[in-house]
Amino acid sequence: MKTSALLLALPSILANFSLPASADSTAGIILSTKCRGGYNINIWQNYNSGELLYRATSPNGNLSLGKGTSQATEGVRVYKFRNRNYEYSVWDGTLDNPQAGTLEVYKNNRIVMKQACRKS
Image 1 (cartoon, rainbow, N blue to C red):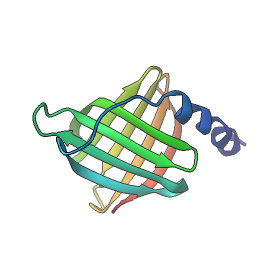
Image 2: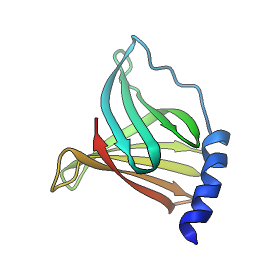
Image 3: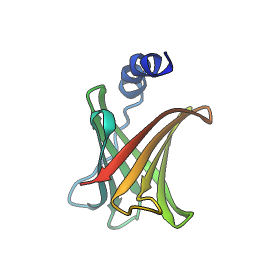
């Protein structure tokens, strides 16, 4: 029941929260993942400013965010991006498998989605 409700809500989450953030020749890709559910996540970093950029494509739409943060948590790098009440966390690997990862989406600090990912 929760999964089907989430799948119905995701198109509106992704469609309503798309922001412009440029990733072009001024930025380099630092992480590319393919996640369950058809989510493709790319993290870019601007060469000059160091700004982190988030790009996601999925069957539910595309999402582009800027002004991300990066931190090491439990020996794994985590990239976080915020958009209004939503926070997107992309885990770059796991302690057991550096080629794996996780996409987590929170709304008002409560998890609404968690998908397993693989680096591509």
